[in-house]
Amino acid sequence: MKINRPQRRSLLGLCDGGVPEWLKGADCKSAGYAYVGSNPTSSTTFLQRNQLDLVVIAMSDTSENLPSFSFGDSPELADELLQLVLNGMKTATCGDLHSYEAEGETLPKPGDQFVILDGKGQEACIIEMITVTARQFDEIDEVWAVLEGEGDLSLEHWQQGHKEYFERNGVYAPDMKLVCEYFKVVQIFKLDNAPVKPN
Image 1 (cartoon, rainbow, N blue to C red):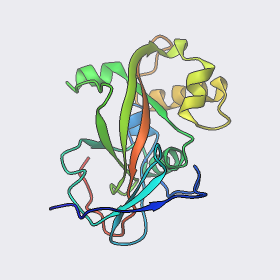
Image 2: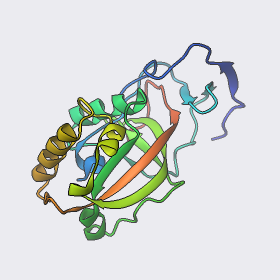
Image 3: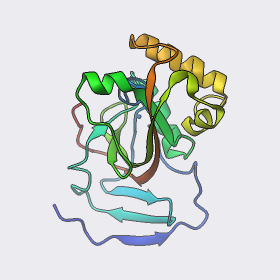
């Protein structure tokens, strides 16, 4: 399906925190920490934060060829983490490196784009990887905790929450290797009847 020529409107006065909701993830990404959500009209709306332009396009296959996932290991967690992403609070996530290797999954790299799904499996936004690095759990610092945007943003909160998460998924170890992904949001969708993507 062709994308209609976008109509552009200036986003005067629109700042982070003024946009939609939601997120999924076996790492904090695919089985446990976030989902992505959506609402309104039958059109797709996305925010290009770098240029502060709101572009409204007709339903299209823009995201059809991109891989998709939801953060966290529950719909509730997915939606909670997605809200943080859409509000600009969460710009990083991490996952268990061993899970990627065991499942034969290709590691993401800078420039890769992914569709983020909400707790209902609906498309919520598209993110693009900026940097991808490998670090041990016990090497995560305060800066990374802030980038992940969860709780009170402290390293202690990050350690406790992620320890519980990885224990739930049976992979926790203090020296476990993590795939640390720093990303930006490049599109935010607003739709009523988005097709559900299979996990």
